Length: 314
Image 1 (cartoon, rainbow, N blue to C red):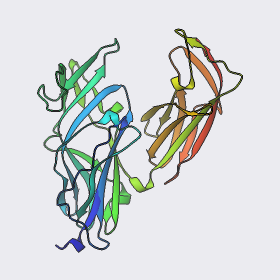
Image 2: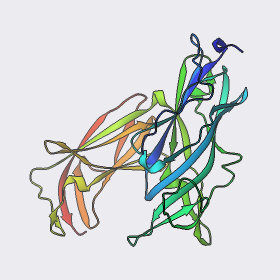
Image 3: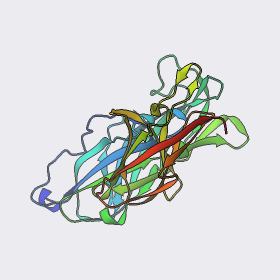
Image 4: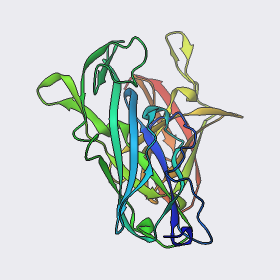
């Protein structure tokens, strides 16, 4: 089959928990599609959670559909998903694929570890193997991280309908790996965790975003905690999707008394927005929260709130 009869695809990934961007990974074959043939790209992303680190090794990515299975990437990549919140990393760039209908992406994950907060100032590491190559030097592995068949049958991620049929041009898919929902204790086994990925794929071209600005009413004086006056930088914005997955982003000082939080790469739909404060702090805002935020395809609105009261205690 000639290159003119092929398309290209890109795969981007993100984590719903925090991200360290990786460099571009060369697609299998590396050829450039001629004319208007389809292309495919993949990017990865993640959303914030309580896991301190979630490192995975992706050994292969396949595109599965009417033409069987097409290898998009087979150069192993190891990345910490918790560093991807609010950004993306490119896994497959412009891979040439045959025109056709595709249903799934298949991720072969050959190893992983998580570092979790024990709630007492210490942390523990659970790994797929005590000699997993992705472990940091000198790491002490507390227990096992189970990864049911992901190294053999792989992790299957269904494609959205908008990118299922490839005829020409380029499709970019954003794969959202929700770290906060993807790991949990094995029942009855305190020394074992299980990886049960909550992953979805979105057409990158239709994603939107939301910017949240917060100011403090001039009449409000921030309370002092442990000798330090609080600021809005001690608050976070929390966005909840229709599937109850949440993304928490700390407010950062944008200058002129405004603090901001950005939520990029959102699938179109309605979200619930609220804020969190340090333990023992109560507050009110105008408008009141939770507030409903509607994200349209390709839209990136800005919403503004004012903190009208802050106090210690209930």
